[in-house]
Image 1 (cartoon, rainbow, N blue to C red):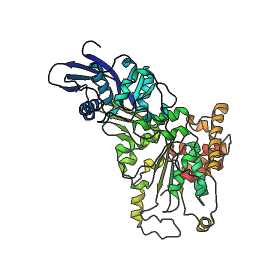
Image 2: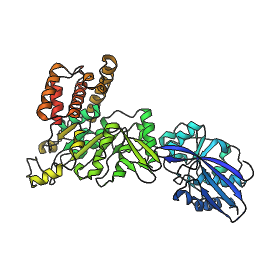
Image 3: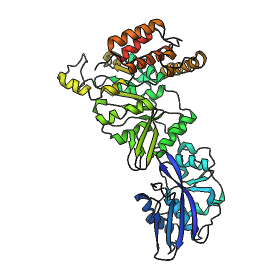
Image 4: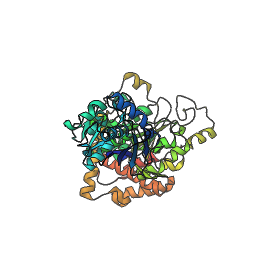
Length: 493
């Protein structure tokens, strides 16, 4: 600091990353007020009114000086309400109302209410990661840092402006854990008479294959889909940290990652393309990114708009979304397991022996074509979910539970890891790395010719067959594995 000049560290969000920003403030004579430069957006400019009210309500003096604030670097667009707290701290420090010692070691992020209390802002996990990299202490509403703040020492709690800034130099830095969100426990044991569908879900979970369920209303498609996270392995610490970061940037609660629960996203079919893959101003992650390391479930798939569905094709292949905007490239991860459910026709009863379909063939073809061939080609497993037998439902017959299905999934994944490390069979090497037996290769060639598979379809069928072999812990793929995989692919509707 020299004279009436001071700088306080803060940050701004860009995609799912926090970038450092220096809040430089200078005082001068002239008409009292504050001007902010450095590419601030509307929410940053509104901080001028909030900060003055918060300072006054906290018992400090609102100095009748001219404040000039520069948000550096100037070429980076600044957005969000997280600049309220650093602006207030900078104003109080430059006017001598709080000591300046220790400010250089802190990074301030937070929104101020008019009474001086500190409110949470989205992205605090990203801010905490930046503070760790730069060796600073993040000063914020610590309870909003989510599970990622548990056990760390670079987060300082700050509940309100009056007590907070006066106690900055008293130590006591801590992170406060969040109680995990414990919702009702779902189990596949509650889904009756759907053992073939459960088998397909085990294959999907074991090999991370996309799954499309087609069937009449009331057949249990949504029940099956919503229980998929119960058979997936828990998040690793690295995955949980990444999921918490994405959820924090999106303004979501991140408590469930403490239990290793994987994300489950089920957007409504009225969602826009920006809502699905990301966008807006400022640029936010979309549903595909919020489902990262988890499950994305699209119910009533043909009801989604065509441009939204076709925008999924590139994330399917590359597991990343790249959005090019005027201010640069935004990159969002999106490695998820895809689930979808659809009715076979507009009335929903095509193929249902208990109800007659009332749709004209042209209407059925038009309805089924809404999904589009290129997207369907990228979904590995297609099944028809029939209505459960009424007698079994009334009697309460039980089938495979989530625990039994999870054992199959974990066993298959462990066997695959052993196979790749010991036998050197790696799926990424193409058909050569999948250990297709001679009979299996012959059957695959014959089925590809008769069903008209393209090159991508052949590889995807082989990958599903490899997953089926891993579930039974077979070192090579048999012809039975290929035939089952082809049965999941041969869906014309």
